[in-house]
Amino acid sequence: MPTDEDLLTKEQIAELLSPGQPLTVRSVERYISLAEVSPAEKGGGRGQVSRFRRSDVEKIVTAYRAAKEARESGESQALAPRTNSAVAAFEGLLGRQAEGFEALRSALDPWPVWIDTKRAVELSGMPPSWLHAGLRKGELAAVGKRTTRRIHRDDLRAFCDKVKEPEFLAALLTKSAT
Image (cartoon, rainbow, N blue to C red):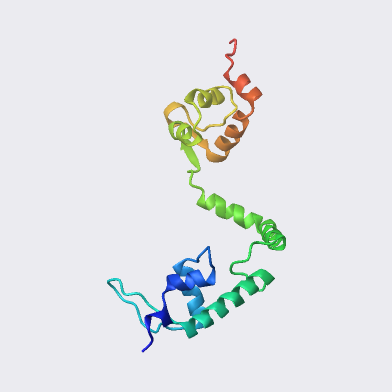
């Protein structure tokens, strides 16, 4: 039977794999599974911890180094950072599929298609006076009268973009001389 000096816990293996900046237990478990090693003493509940033989730890270290080399050489995609070519390929996909993505976006849009004025104020976050001024001056299209007035979500978003311009907002809030 192996002695306590011959058996190592996952925390001790983490310290061996990356001294000074130990890996997480989860990372160590990944390398243990890559090395296809099973514990000499199986851990269980109530504080029992799995322990691994030193000979098996060498297999884990080998698996760790192989994964690190593969990651650094670009052979492994799992933990490699995104490259410019990957970003360009993704952007190309978006360009080709723009119409489909636009249809999906409109189907998944959290705003209802037609919004009453009270809800429009809540969703846009602007003061009610700005919204009503836009409706009064014809800058914001609406359907219906007074209590049944509804605004299309795309018109509301376009109006919100216009309100960001200081000149437009100043002109909107000036009182007309009628």
